[in-house]
Image 1 (cartoon, one colour):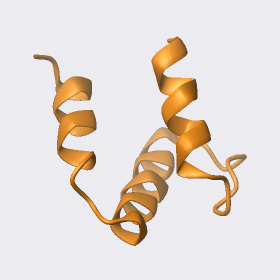
Image 2 (cartoon, one colour; image 1 turned 135 degrees about the vertical axis):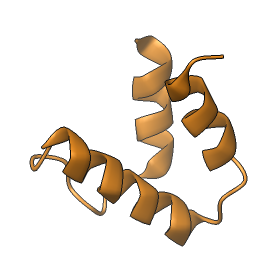
Image 3 (tube, helix red, strand yellow; image 1 turned 180 degrees about the horizontal axis):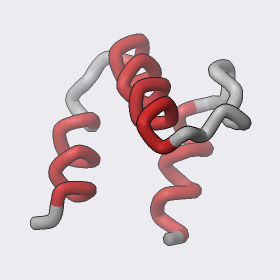
Image 4 (cartoon, one colour; image 1 turned 60 degrees about the vertical axis):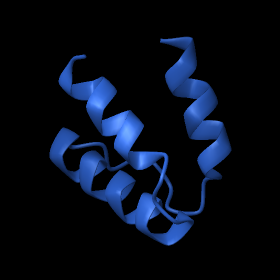
Length: 51
């Protein structure tokens, strides 16, 4: 399992507010300021699966 897989698997058990906070932190680390905070988590999971 690579690091991205580990992050994904651990994030599945997080409550929604914690998952959003984790996503914000990942975006911060990646320098992605375009992503909106109120974007539904489900749409982000679908985006990840397409990669």
